[in-house]
Image (cartoon, rainbow, N blue to C red; front, side):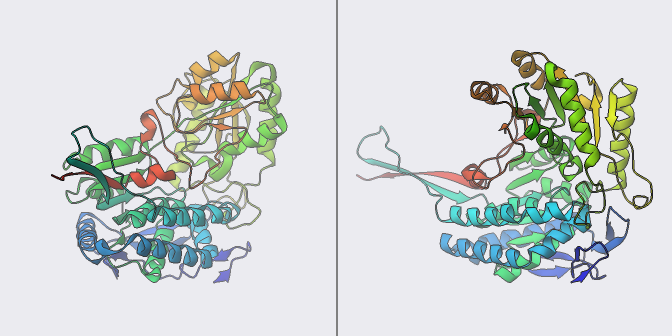
Length: 497
């Protein structure tokens, strides 16, 4: 590896060579021969040409995954699967600096953020390794009399189509691959065309760890071709998808052909609620980074900032001041706190919302523009933005922006904020800032969201489930519930007489 002029590690994987598909343990060209470019969103530099998978390649990969599932992989014991997960964790640990840098160069996240994910990434793999040997069926007393013995078996679902977004490629890949390896499933992983490099490098490490050919296949491509083909494929038993609500609906439609199992982690417009009795010194940075982390490109970001009226002006002003102190820059710079947006399309979308916010009457306290001055001119940079005087009916309060934009909204009391906080089609994350334990418990129960963070935001652990209510999807990732998403339950009856 070589060092770039910002001091970050430039991975050897960015070597100018064309990146190919991983199918059945082999690195192969796309059947069409097509490629696409992936580039650094901070500079526009083309990082690699990547083989562009489509329906023909998905079919090849699914065939390989089915053969592996029915072949020797099916005979691996839970302990065997545990050991391969632990070997993979060790390899990722040894190569983590490279993987973190790949995430940074390919999708723009600050290197400080991608490096900080080390504990989480390794913890996830080692947690899945523990689950490989602990998931089991049960014996069940029945009421048919002593001549019947009943029990259950838990068996792998089969071939899993895993479709991941670009906003955290390493973590997203492991969130799909980990439970599949633990349960004995096989995977066709379709990374986003905006950030395919880390998943491809992870595919190399899977082979090095001893994962058999065909168990993990990696096919980068576009949603309309590769993603759609995977969702519709009649020999895929389950699709695990993370992405937008609109794409999630297409996945549901595509899955109808063989009624495949689905788990969907979709968008969000999460309420982050600050009461006047909160520790404001903790709540200001907490509420700010609930949105500005990863440039707002997180589904569960707390973008609707509800603040109790008595402290509204002071608190929102302090959040704006905090935003102004954040260093916006290239992800490869170790001092950067807010990196670029992932693409020109995403930049155009976010800037459009900035204009809409002003047009609909929101008061922009800070930010509100694209950065184009020296050092930013070749990248997709937007200044961290805080809008005040936001109404519930404004588009910036209703629609997922996926950028560093806070919509601050005043409220009077707990009953009002519960009603308004729940007045959204989404239900992924939420936050509550208060010193009142009773109030915290009341909000935790009343908010219709898959996660409620109290006096913190975005806390995650491999043992704690994560997922959505309403149009934020269904199914859970992390926790024992995640493993269950990859298992079928079979009932067995034995008449003993």
